Image (cartoon, rainbow over all chains, first blue to last red; front, side):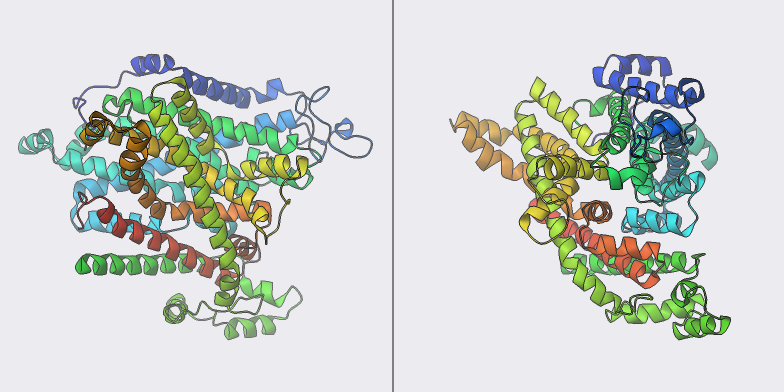
Length: 297
Length: 306
């Protein structure tokens, strides 16, 4: 077993240095560039687009009532209701990013709390928490998410919460494993001998050691979250139209996809690229933050 | 061995019990009233109350759960609210299609993933390896419904090689199975690559080479079997991902399996079906984990049974 915690307890992770090393990797740079484009597009959407995302444009449909193909007046074409797809894509990026960050942040928080408590307390508290985690692992995650989303009227925040409830388990398991191995190290025993309280040990010594792991899992987790949101929205239980999301754009237009394939494949490509970007950056971060894993995968 | 098995089976049973309780509570607090759905909009208050009583939905939560559990241990999953059929009959009629799809998916996943992983390991560090590893990231980042629609568009609509949807012959199975397998093949190619690299590093491989065995013989007789086994055992753990995947893939391809059954039931608030499919899925997941745990010590004797 490779010991992943060789960083000295107080070593702050120099963000600048990590970013610098990340930039030297071509794939990570590619991922960062995609993320930058999507974030930029989402933030500046109102100033970039020519039409409002929900506006049904008269000139957005052909005389026969079919959507317009990409190019020309509409950069990415229009959808079945004659709305500008480019505009919906940019506003949809907001949905994906908000859910990606909120749901993943919540999942990471729950996972860390459960994992660290179970790993540090051991005893019956730890046992109960980890058995509960095992139980969650046996749930068919997507089915659970669909059920939950159908139970609560899905809104942006509900979807984020549902995803968080399904996704915290992996983090909890990783944090648990790391915490148990950390808790057995000498410097923790030394701290205890010196009379440090549990809270102090947890906050000042265990948590800082978990930061690299959490950064890596947090980044990779956004990719999982983006895919799950898209899947829920595609099934119609995610973000509800007319609020645009990349998944529900496909949901709304899939019946017509043989005639207007861009309505499925443009948002599809966007979902893939964003998920890929976070995967690439997360993988590179793992290499940069944890030298023992380098070249191992 | 017997003690280990017994403990693991007991654990599995407890986990299933927990899953059933949580699902039951979740569905119990469902704001949409199933009785209203059954009775229809024009039903009088009296009819609604009668149906509620008939289905036992007027009882407290724990009584309802106890009843459900009593049925469950006898293999009785209750009756569908809307279809007036036993849930177990419905699931049994849909399960073969889903199992076929899963088997196809697992086969594709292994075929694509393991082959690419071995190639990447043999070309470690070279452009081919790097290219394959990027491809594996693309595979795990691709949403299944987009892959499904893309395959449908290219191979069914444009080229006409496969039917657009439906169920029955082998050619119906190809596209859904590939769709289901692609995401996992990305992970498997990465795992296979590192497992293979690990094995190729071992002393006995060097010995084999020193003996003058051919590259092919070393690869197929000595390295591959050892590198593949631990990865095959991982499939047991992945059943949960497949159980989610079939909901999406069955919906894209109109595949008549339990995923679609569950999906329709969720839209119609047909709770017994949702409950039944969740329990059956959880059963498969637990069984998969159990098999993985039992098989692993046999494959790698260094892993002790605890």
